[in-house]
Image (cartoon, rainbow, N blue to C red):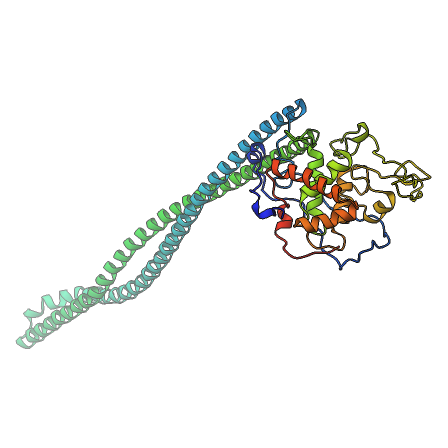
Length: 479
C-alpha cells in the first residue's frame, strides 16, 4: 500500500516568504465534480479550463514555489536580495502604521476626555445662567415690594409734613391764648393736647410704615449683592466653558490630523506590500527556472505536477503525475529540450510516427499536423506524450492562459490528471493507481517504473501526497 497524505509532514514556507507575512494557504482550488463517468472517453466538446488563477500569483505561501529547495542561481540570489529589501521596507511601513494607529488612539482618548470636560463646563455654565436668572427675577420682585412699601411710607411722611406745617401755622394763636379767660385757657390747652396727640399718632403711623419698608430695602440690597455674585459666577463659568470648548475643538483637530497620518501610513504600507508582492512574483519566476536540489527535476515541472494534483477531478498524489513526467520525457528534457519558467518545452518533443510498424499502432493523422508536425500519421506530443486524438478529449489549461497546449508542462500535467481520474474514484492506493496507469499505458512494467520514479520524489521532498485543498475533500468525486 502507498502512504497517503496523513503520513506526510506539514509543508514548509521559506524564511523570506514568512518575512513578508504571506498567509499560509494555497491559492489553487479543485474544480467541482460532475457526473459519473463511463469507461469510454466521450466526444470532445473542446478544451476545458481547469484553473482560474495564474501559477505565478502571490496569494499565500505555496509549498512548492516558496518552500521546495532549489539550487541557487545568480538570478535567484539577485531577486532574493530584492525581496529582503522589499520585506524590510514593508516591515518599516507596518511599524509606522502601528505607531500611527497607537498615537491616534491616544489622541482620540484625550479628545474624548476634552469633550467630556467641555460638556461638564457647559453644564456648569448653564446652571450658573439659571441661578443668575432666578436671583435677578427675585431682585425684580423685591424691588417692586420695596417700591410699594416706599410709596406707603412716603404717604405717611407727607401726612406728617402736612401736620407739621399746620401746627406751625397755628402756633402764634395758641401762644397768647393764656391771656384770655380761664375758659379760653382750657380751650387752648385742649387744642394743644389734641395737636400733641395727633402728632404722636402720625409719627407712629410713619414708624409703622418705615419698618416693612426697611426690611424690604435690606432684602433688596441682599438680593442685589447675590445677583452681582451670580453674574460674576456666570462670567467665570462662561470663560471656563469657552476655554474647554476651544480645547475640545483643538483635540478634535489633532485627531483629524492623526487620521490623515494613519491614512498616509496605510497607503504607504499598501504600496510597500504591493512592491513586496511584485518581488515575490519575480522570485517565484526566478525559482521556476531552477532545479530542485538533489533531484533531476525542474521546479517548474514539480509545480506543474503539484498544481495538476490540486486541480484534478479526483484525489491523485502529485508524485504519481511526476513519475509519468519522468518516464515519458524526463520532465520535458527529451530530444535536447528543456522547460522554460512558463512551463513550455524549448523544442517540440515528438514520438515516433504511429504508422503500424511492428509493435506500433497505426493511427492516421487526426490533427492535420497541427500538434505533431506530421500530416500523415499521429505522433505522441509534449512532455506527457499525448497523441493528438487523446489530447483533444482531455486538453487542459493548467496555467490559466486560455491556450491549452500539449507542449506546456502545466497543461500536459493537468490533462494527464484528468485522464487518469476518468471513470475512477480517488487514486490513493497502489491498486487504484496501477489500474489508472494501465489506461495511460497498457504495460505493467510501465506502471512499476512510474511508481518507482514517483516514490523517489515523494521520499526526497517534504511535501504531503495531496495539496491541502484536496486533503480537506474526502468525498469521492467524478469528472
